Amino acid sequence: MREKLRVAMFSRVPRRADSPRGGVESVTVALAQQLGATEGVDLHLVTLERGLSAAVVEPFGPATVHRLPGSRWPHVLDILVGPGHWRLRRYLRQLAPDVVHFQEYHGLTIGQLDVPHVYTLHGFDHANIPADGGRMAWLRAPLWRCVEAYGLARQRYMVSISPYVREEIEPLTPAWIFEIDNPLVPAFFDVKRAEVPGRVFFAGWISSRKNPLTLVKAFARIAPELPEAHLHIAGEAKNQDAAYAAALRQTIAAHGLGGRVTLLGRVSQDEIRRQLGQASVFVLPSLQENSPMAIAEAMAVGVPVISSNRCGMPYMIREGETGFLLDPEDVSALADRLAALLADAPRRRAMGQAAREDAVERFHPRAVADRTLEAYRTMLREAAQGLASPPVAAPRT
Image (cartoon, rainbow, N blue to C red; front, side):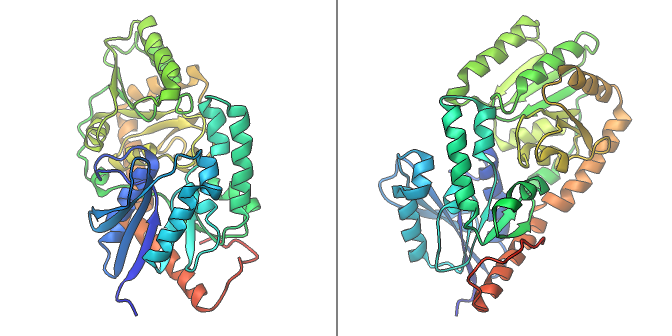
């Protein structure tokens, strides 16, 4: 019998722990650092990467990462029947973990394994694709909806990162659903606030789904009355969003905001924390999100948040207490909320403190790792009892 619980986690894994790209990589880094350092846990991260000819095994902090050659098949096909699907199955069999935790779509369609496994759903591509736009969205979105429905119906265990996710998946799956928030790396809780009055901050992909263009338009309305206000935008555009990024720059120029809006591009996690430490307000007016890491990061630093009243964001922000929620396409409402918060320092401080308290309880990696390990133990107990079929109901845990 093993001395340690061997956990295999399939996800996206950055080359450097301090340089994750996107929410899933950030979650993986935070959870891996905490789980890997937990006594009695032997953590192995597994990922598929294009450009590799053979598997690469190397240390990743307190864990071990296994980088497998990725497939050039379209993602929606690869997760079903492609080379990546079969390579992942074979490798997991060789690794022989006690439990497998999938953070990526291959886990949705992996099928039966010899060990208990759980799948965390970080996003709904059938909803993200129309919000992102791009080539053949009209075809790709319904195709992903079918694949998601197929995979969800075959899950035994799932992690819901938000009550919104649970509400969406519960009618589609018989799985036992564990409710566990996404974790942050501890450094976000250690940031010392050094607010620059009037600093507005956005961090995310430069895309129609993240919707920074609405923020720029709202900022243009308040800029003449608030000369100290300055907007910092961190993030880069993917190739398919080049036209959107160009429209963003054109709007900044058209309103004469070149000296009031700073486009930071892609920045490090250290720079994100520095920007949050200086921010008066964090704004993320996304059209579609499950549980965005950027909001959790702002909350952990103690920054009030203005965000969208759609999808999972209302489950993160307490209206009027830790931030404000609004229609992400309502430029006037966003401008009004921004102006009101920038003019009221005591309210900003109170909201930021309340947001931080919520973040410590929900997003600190120790708390998330404890809940995750309890989910693993539940799965292993059921496996020991010989339970092989999904439960009739989906218990709330």
